[in-house]
Image 1 (cartoon, rainbow, N blue to C red):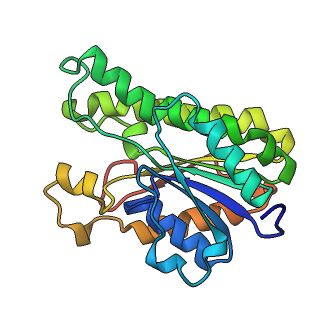
Image 2: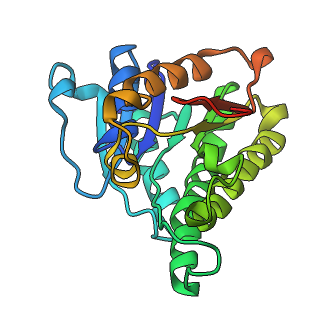
Length: 236
């Protein structure tokens, strides 16, 4: 397709949950979206204008995934304006119980994968003069809620740190990075881990509204961390 005047966003984990909601929200707002999915499939909401949708078979654990995906998007659209790194896993074990292999897997998917993806898109994000990086962290990256969430929290604290690292690395180039830190969101992952009814959790569509707002802010309104919660806690 070549260079387009339409803004382009990459969204990982776009087949369902938060990623799917963000993709639809940006598509409806006029963005071209590249959807990272293990099994690429054009969503029903995209059939009205499939020229603005790019599908990519994204494997977060692949060392070459970031560069391969960004290269494919540049070939298709000629620009990258935003990256929403949403793909992640949870292993509900304490920092004592979790095995080395399980911890390595969680750090690989939750931390290394978004680092590689953003790094692969970095030059294109800088070219836009207002590139946007959104990393889906968690309130578990702000506090350790329980022993069972401890290992997951370690990985999400790292995601928050990664967002700050990107913010410093790209600030002079107009790149702005934000760590989104939600509590329970009504996704398959959260529903499997909580006794809360899904309708009492933050909805993926509402989180998509937040992300749309953040990437639309000017460079002079940078937001480093954004916490969202469905329940009352002491600080969040």
